[in-house]
Length: 314
Image (cartoon, rainbow, N blue to C red; front, side):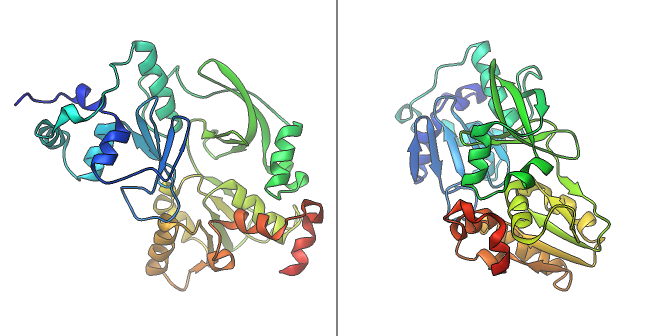
């Protein structure tokens, strides 16, 4: 039996490999195949495989990588154990991606850097080239579709130009405390390095916690005018920062959690309630039939002209 090398294992088609394990995509859009995560339990597909680059990314946890990275997580084994297991499998039944050229490897590295993984080449990543007051019409239209008023978005967000794969894109940028940006538009979702939390200190005794910045903007839309904030804010920008932020959260007298209502978000809420049920408050019941606070807000504002009048309903 020929021993499978790590480089050869990385070339096994991930879509074929997942199918051999009983996992089928819930939706396919060009090269992107979306799955219910094989690594945890969830109801909304957040696990993406880009078949062209043969890499995966779990949007709920911020993890990603190649087939070997997936295999050691899925089987909870070492690389050597995974390769031994694959060597005994019917490898010819899988299709293989050709060994990428150096340029191809850099292209893949750039994708993984966007997923928060270590980069093979630091020059191949999202590079911020400019930021300014948010004014682009297409971005403002995108905010409107997500029921976020312009004056709130422009207070906390910037219009950001960045380069990726040699192409310039313009998106909404939300700054974190390490100097990186969360980057969003109708057609793009990513982040620039370094990845970190966004902590906003208004001198309050309570803390309000969100998974992503659109939920933070949604809360502001619902509750307060900018300048009348009576709570501090923590935007995690990735659920992977939740446990790491425990010491920060437990400085407060009350911590209100507005996490996504998927399996990962609810698990973290339950974990916090086990830490201290008197301190942590699960506020996700407000949007119990929706995936997150922004999704709920959009459902309550079918006519975007209503603007902030929704506050009267709360």
